[in-house]
Image 1 (cartoon, rainbow, N blue to C red):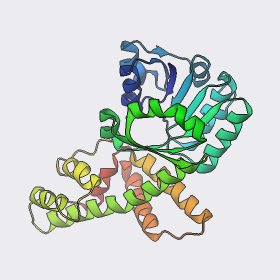
Image 2: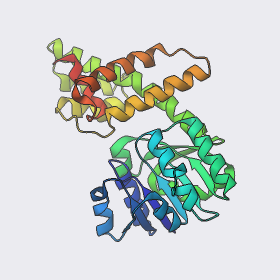
Image 3: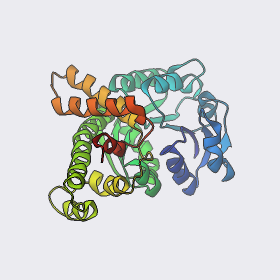
Length: 286
């Protein structure tokens, strides 16, 4: 297929590369064009804008930063929905607003396009290894069309229901991670502060009931002083705020989420917005 891929950052670059590995022809766009260079070197075509990518493609995938970026790319003048040919499949893999996903779906349907929301979880490693979990919302027929392409990028792919349901599922996922990352960082900090060997503690904890994906993947990075982003703090804050907003809409009070959000906002205010989420460990001073 001819695929337009918008967003070639920490995760998108690997995901687009897997589609090329599967034999698809890619045209790519990123606001910072240099981030497309590894794909261009492999034969992808660089486009001047998201609308140009849509116009040249049978399917369009995107994984970008914030809901405002998604809205501009899809619904802005000369954007994806305006330029895509009837029948084109649109799959936004950004973690974004459920209401925006529904808005994009409605606008796409009005122009004879197929739209799904399919945010992912698994971080930079999952993107590199094509082991992402992908949480999908949209019409059954559209999801079936997308599935062979999604399987190229992920391992666990679940259709949760109508447009917006993929985003709701991803926000639930981020609520789990918020509390987990607090526990990972506070537990490792406590172990170190108490004079324990943190590497030995990590080995023991991840093999027991405290074990988790976050502990196993971010624990070693923390102990090595590696706070480079597999997932940016600034994007996690965005996700937690979306989850907080959505929880209010369904009448839920999530105090644990608020506690994690407060800590991450404190980290961002101290200069850690560009760190990976494991950068939270820095707040504990050891």
